[in-house]
Length: 133
Image (cartoon, rainbow, N blue to C red):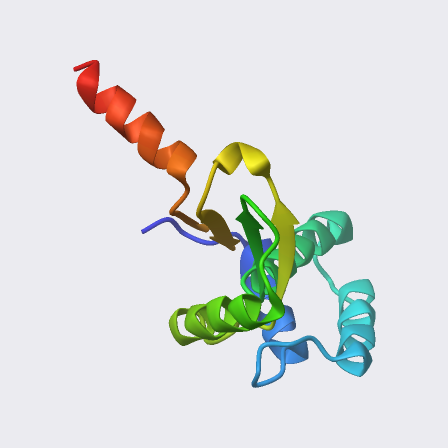
């Protein structure tokens, strides 16, 4: 296991300080975080701020899904997809809905670093790869 730098350790501690139980960020606590960074004794406050930003982005990315479908989805279908995703990703708070006709059918979902691809375009690509072997 890789050893964490002083910046990573401090960033994690500060980020935990501003993250609420439901993994959302509190505006009031973010102000406390900024004050803590400014009063930090670490030599490079810029490096610490970058690390905090990187870790905060990971937290926020895990709270939002990007769902792309071949055609627009009805509100009912969107609600069903979001509800199913929230069972797998309890921290998920919102979704961004996109349309890409090149998918041909089905959809793709991104939550943080996790990807789901049920598109026909992906299926055709997989079949093509198998046939070329």
